[in-house]
Length: 248
Image 1 (cartoon, helix red, strand yellow):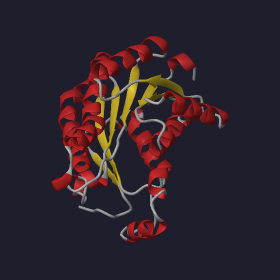
Image 2: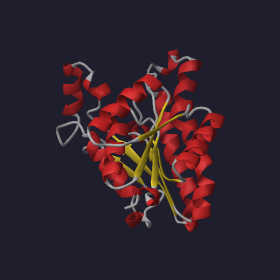
Image 3: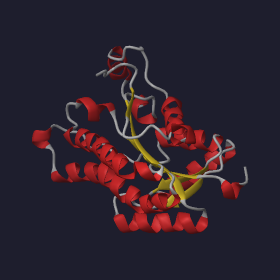
Image 4: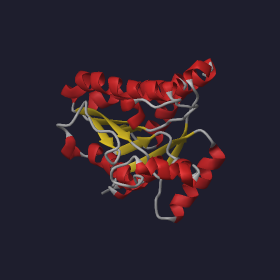
């Protein structure tokens, strides 16, 4: 496919474990992949590493917590690369702690990064998708947004909010050929999870019926599935990918 005719896929939080796997998967599927970043030094190193592996990923800077900054980022993508056809809202952080001791800063930091960012990024691309009668919005939530988790009132609230957003927007834009879906991963073998002490990891795995952590590529494959033209009848859905740890 000619490079200029490729659909453009924007992944926020691209340089993390899940984001990296998504970028690789979508690139292999023929999309023009754009990764969002905040830390330029880390992004440059990440981009070069992937290039050495055969993945040519464009990068754009933008603080997804800031509405204006996101607007500028989208304008840069549109002028330099093309219209955003697939948006993967993947940016996220944790600031864990018991609610009785949680600071307002820790609350707002997680809500802004994990939930307000979804509004900021989607708001800046949705009208273009409506005009073109095509779009895919994929929101990366968490099993802990479905079931709750001790010490994560901020994170669980944000991740649960993502799917509330998904359901409503899905209904509003369905007639324009746009789908909006949520993916809720369980414990995935990212660098962050693998940095947890082995004893704690073993306790986590013991609670997962399939008996292992999930792979980043498994989540990326689901992203790719939902991004495709073949999934136009799937919208407003929440896909659990947690090895049976939370079933309902």
